[in-house]
Length: 324
Picture 1 (cartoon, one colour):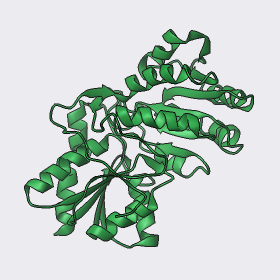
Picture 2 (cartoon, rainbow, N blue to C red):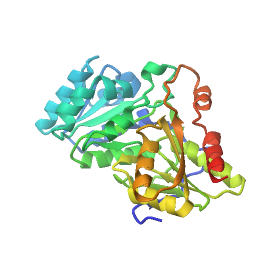
Picture 3 (cartoon, rainbow, N blue to C red):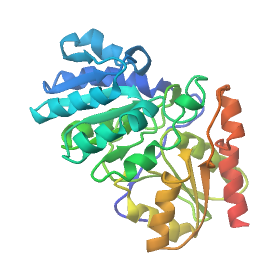
């Protein structure tokens, strides 16, 4: 396996602690503010949903409510960055990645300003808000934008570590957060590194590659496969840009079959990134689990995961079909 990736034994899923990433994000901002006097939070009238209100209550003098005006929100953040502050953006993914896109491109990304763009309520599980609030394209957008680091943590432990790394990194960054509680899979000693993959399972029969909270379902899929005598490698990629190319290639060389899993369109997201990497460095048979060029709808979480093919069973079935 590649020397670049981190090898980690995940915590058991059975009985795992459940923490919402947005809750951990709000609390960690407060902790970071104690050691970073330059940290500010700018919110787009969604603080009680993104949980930026945790920061607002604890550090009110460094919290700015910008209202329903996302373009202005990014413009103000860019201005603050030019005079030495580190602004963190609080809004929903579809509003950040689409409504404020031109401002991000022109006043944040092109001058390479130190703005931390945090998109909450990502993916399909957005509390029955429906297709208007479910973002299928955001990773494709930020991946294509030069110089923007894009981070998709799997749990609250990885998120907290990633936020510390974000404060240490000078430049525009995108952080993708989910709404609902999800299992904690990393122990307290885990350390996130920008651009480094994390090997959670090591098997030679098939390779699973996942991002974000979908990694939890990929872990379940690896267990389902193991019960049928199929040994799967599982590579978690908390940074989709820069991508750990060496780790992706190493898993492909080990298994000769790759299944990607993401709560995002397979076009331009993780599936696209891995396909591009393998086509250039190590052509490999693969399948992509994710949104199949469709928009979503309003429904309970389990129904959405089932209809759009994002469950552990779907990942395992794709792996079995791929290896014949």
